Length: 76
Image 1 (cartoon, rainbow, N blue to C red):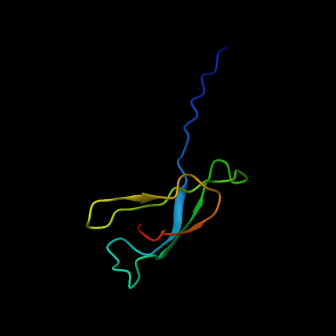
Image 2 (cartoon, rainbow, N blue to C red):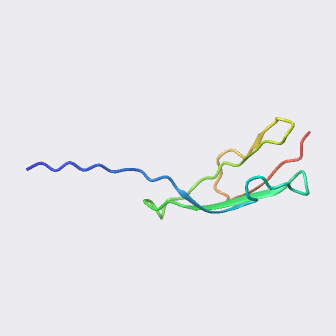
Image 3 (tube, rainbow, N blue to C red):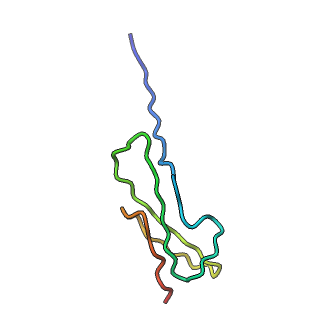
């Protein structure tokens, strides 16, 4: 007897994010945060990658990090 088993990796599910999509921040250096859960690996440490793209077209990214929050750096 042979048994075939397929295992699917379910991506992490965002539980909460701030600010919401389309939000107009009152500052040029807002703090962004997100919380997610990985249902098929609940003990795994998640990493977060924040990206913000202002109307000027020059995007900023946090790079992958363990922190659930990131403050947008001041443009130079």
